[in-house]
Length: 260
Image 1 (cartoon, rainbow, N blue to C red):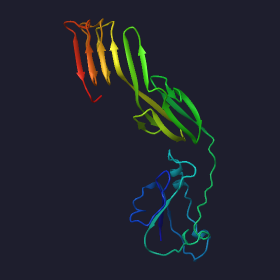
Image 2: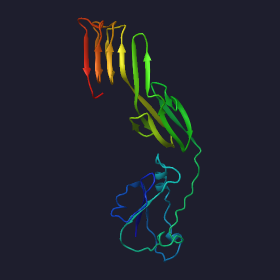
Image 3: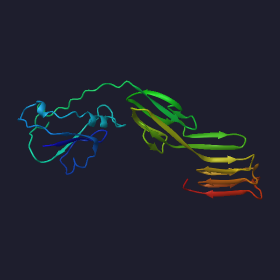
Image 4: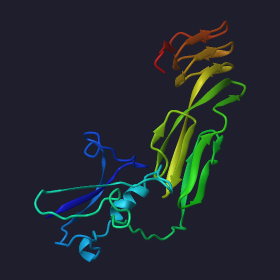
């Protein structure tokens, strides 16, 4: 008689029910343990009734980013139909039912979080931060819109999401990752895009591509001269105000792309 023991691959296992497929429909851990229990007598609790070490299964579950202390664990046991081993269910006898024995050591190591953002409005801040294993952490952008200007341009930028590695969720299109448990060296990169762009007081003689989610405006003093090659691409509006110049021999393109 051979049994295969797996865990349910979820952050907190729901209670089992009597509905059809309630066990087989659950996703299982990659880790598993095979067990060939020797024959035993009813109502005994000896080494014959003891499973092999289940550490790999439990570790895979508790290493999930959203797992936290107090969550439920569930085991799924499958096997062939030859042989018979009787055991008490918890509903039949709480005293005689199987007992899960867990021993653990607290990990006090610290791990790094590398935060990258073109604009330093991140929390935790841009750079390398250090946290103890198991720290509950949330990454966010404190101001989702930024404004920058100089003598030649004015722009508003918006945070469009992040990509992460390690304990940080892999990706998202918001300004907040939500809470996660910090367990390994990790990284997060915040992504930004120009929403509105105004350009003026400059002469362009090179290849230039400007893109904005909403609008691009070229004002007085913006000139494209040979061999300049300029492309404007905006999601909604492109404005060429009086004083904009594209001279003979230069290239200027304007494209509206609502899909930006």
